[in-house]
Image 1 (cartoon, rainbow, N blue to C red):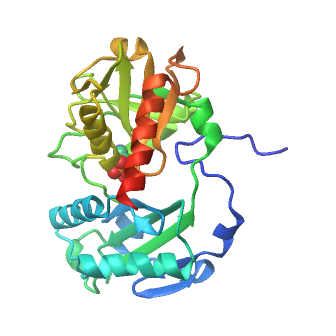
Image 2: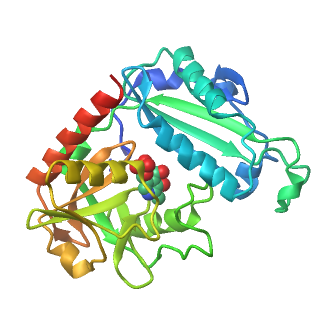
Length: 306
Ligand SMILES: Cc1ncc(COP(=O)(O)O)c(C=O)c1O
């Protein structure tokens, strides 16, 4: 029996070159099959690390300063010394792309964990050998079919956490709350989870930020309890610069089901249309406001990476 086809928010066009990638592991760039980290690594044992997803266009990393700001801020918050300065990390990213002959439609996952532990226990003081830094770069053109079709969302019981538990603004390796949300959505027949905050307002999805369009206005959550997405910030700025009314505000599922359009944002897919939420149809393919924002964002990326 063929595998059933699935839609994920990170569907990329198939690219056989990804079978032979070269991957950066702690200063060495090695073939994919040899790219390994220890079973004692803090990231493997405990999800103790932080990461960024960054894209390369025209040989340049888009919005790199913002990504590095977020990474160093997260590392400081979890008291993790990355051990490389910004120039060092940029050189590592460039070397990995160069080793793979990459310039366009590339997605990098830059990961920094607390490194190899002496013993398989939680105490961060057991991580004594310095951080583990891994960069995976893949040939990764977002699937046109997914953009055309849109994704299906389902609301789930898993809430966005409060900042004093595991701050949902941290791009941490441990993403179990988001993973459980995604599993619940998939069991409900959707592709991605729509997550609420503890007041019941619509907040974000498990791996992307969330926007709706109502009567020509673009709405997204206040920004509390969601990842401070770099694509989200760019979309808000583009709307404001181009006279598209845009509001960061609380809104409910009623207002969400009644939206004319909805889309999610993230570095990988830019803006991906939402076709359906909890079985309610939203729009058949990308709507006019989503298309306009996609075009503005494409132009922004082009200018940024010229
Ligand atoms: C939970 C979550 N929301 C949103 C995003 C999108 O952020 P960005 O636009 O910076 O890629 C990410 C990406 O890491 C994420 O993990």
